[in-house]
Image (cartoon, rainbow, N blue to C red; front, side, top):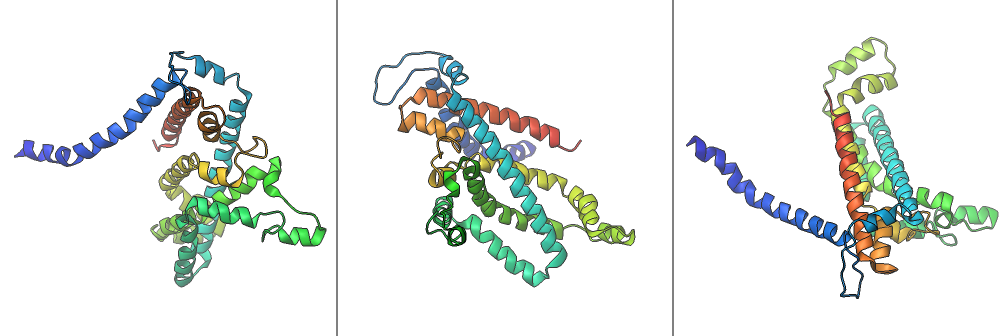
Length: 289
C-alpha cells in the first residue's frame, strides 16, 4: 500500500513532465546542432564548422552592440518596474481606503491584460511627432515636432516607459496585496517607537517581503528578455541599431537580412547559456541563508 502511494504522484505527473522535457530538449538540441553548422536559408548544402560561428560573434560589432542594448534594457526595465511597484504599492497601502484600493487595483491590472503588440501600436501613435497626444503640446508651444523614437538617446527610454507602464502597475497591485497579508503588530510597534512612515516600510515591511519581492524581480527579469514584440513594433531596432537587442539581431540575421540560420542559432544558444548561468548565480546569491 505504501509503495502504491509513493508511485501514484509519478503516474499523474510523469506524462506531463515527459511532454515538457521533449518540448524543451528537442528544440534546444536542434538549435545547438544548427549553431555548429553553416546552414543558410534556401541552401541544401550543410557543413559542420563547429565553433566557428561562436568565435565570429566576438568580432562582430553589431553583436556586441546588441548585447550592450540587451543589458541596458534589462537593467532599466527591471529596476524601474520594481521601483514603481514598491512605491505605488506602499502609497496605496498607506493612503488609500479599501474602496479606493479595489478601484485602483482594477485600473492597474488593465495594462497587463492588453496584448503587448496592441499596447505598442497605441503608444507608438501617442508618441507620433506630428499627431501624437503626448508630443502635440511640445509642437504647439515650440512649433517643432518632437520625435522621441527617432533619437538614439530617447528611443530606448521611450520604449522602456511603455514596458514599465504595462508591468509596473500590475506589480504594484501584487505588492499591495502582499502588504495587506502582513501582521499589524510590527507596524504598531514601530509607530510606538516613533518611527517615521518611510522607516516603517523601509525597515519593517519590505524586509518581511524580501522573498516575494526577489521572486517578482526574477519574474520581471525573465519577462524583459521577451520584449522582442514591443521593441520591434515601436522602433524595429532603430534609429540605426540603438535599440536592437540580441534576440532582434538574431532574428534579423536568420530571417530578414542574410538568412544565416546557423549564425543566428549560435546567438540564441549563447543567450540561453548566459541567461541560465546568470539566473542561477543570482538566485543562489539572493536566496536567504
